[in-house]
Length: 210
Image (tube, rainbow, N blue to C red; front, top):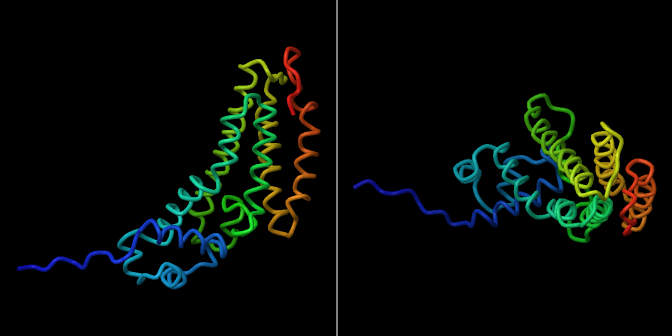
């Protein structure tokens, strides 16, 4: 009688979280399969069997990151009642997430993949796609503000405004990685919101709630 393979002796969800922690600390190129095996407490063949290649594991890690650390800024965009409040809350949530006491001080979408190795082009494009999705999400929230009547913007400017605030989000991550404190990031957020009424003036029938 043929014998079955040995059952897994590890929890895939726990292992994925351990992989997230390591990729977050070292980035994609700075993390080897051997590093992952040690951090996850499993042999490299088990990594391949359960998660696929290093790249496939990283994609699963980024999905977990998006559902956990990456969720508060997106939730702010969804839940705040006006476009201005949504952008302000998104920036503050970003600053909170990238200066937490228990995680590296940067956003993985911005800084997890270096710009070097040619063989990692697919990973860089994968992260670029996710950053482009964040820009689209911000743009859609601005469009919702126009539809709701709390925002006026000249035709064709929503994309540019969305790119501006996407750039602020990405810049916050670089500042945090280079040592900026939460209070220092708040000054950047304040400056970005000072520009709001020039870039996206409120509709007359609404007052500025922030």
